[in-house]
Amino acid sequence: MESITLGQNALSVTPLCLGTWAWGDKLFWSYGNDYGSEQVEQAFNAAIEAGTTFFDTAEVYGLGLSEELLGRFMKKTDKDIQIATKFGPLPWRFSAESVSEALTESLKRLQVEQIALYQVHWPFTFFMSQETLMNALATEVEKGRIKTIGVSNYSQAQMQEAHQILARRGIPLAVNQVRYSLLTRQVESQGIIATAKQLGVTILAYSPLAQGLLTGKYTVENSINPTGARKIDPRFSKENLQKIEPVISLLRTIGEKYNRTPAQVALNWLIAQGNVIPISGVKTAEQVKQNAGALGWKLTDDEIVQLNEVSRPWLN
View (cartoon, helix red, strand yellow):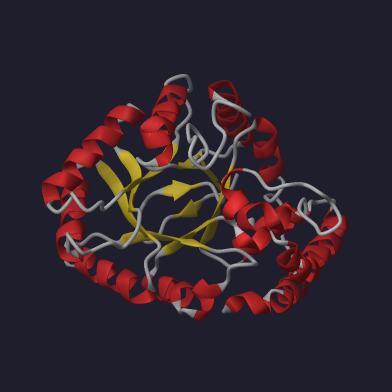
């Protein structure tokens, strides 16, 4: 499988990342009811078999259980696994020491000595300045406990600031993880995508299927009720499902040409943007296999233009 280098760093990862927010999470997802550790371990193993070895997690996912599960599963394989996890700049964390302490706990849960990609979960700087935060992360790179540094949900200006602070330490900013899909293209109009390319920062696209809307599973005609985090998402209303129908219809049409699903086409569109890695959330082995169908083929330039045009309303 081809690989992508994160930013200007030496870390190479697979062109598709698997998200583990739902692993252990009972607040937004139904971990322990509809699925459990057995199902997510099967998903992990299916990913390894498919050649996808890049996983995204966070210390807050399942209150640490997501990291623990990944650590447990990694101990059972000799494959080289790249883990991206996240530090939460919570109100009571206001010093460089708090960054070091949080990292130590993530390392313990993951049962590793170095984390491939350590990201700041959101740009909350009321109690800790970007200067303090980025320098604390740079120190951890120098210690060897972090390989690369990333941010998440950063604006254009915030990304530039983080990049500048790290550059003074001779460390490149690897990624900015943002919400990005055919139905959430605001990061383009906000200048985040263009600036990331200028700075050599890779975009990790979370919610690349818009919480499942781009799978084509949810339509006005069928009566599937959204579950988990989707229950409180207004995008699953009848009115919005009617609005996105032209996008779903085009995804189906293109998918028929390649014998691919709407979801696989939507993921391929993101990859086609260049220097963008979709993070697709998975809970089962079957979902992993479905996601793998987004790789190994390419949309034509004309098809990319068509998808750009039909999704233009979601630029703003």
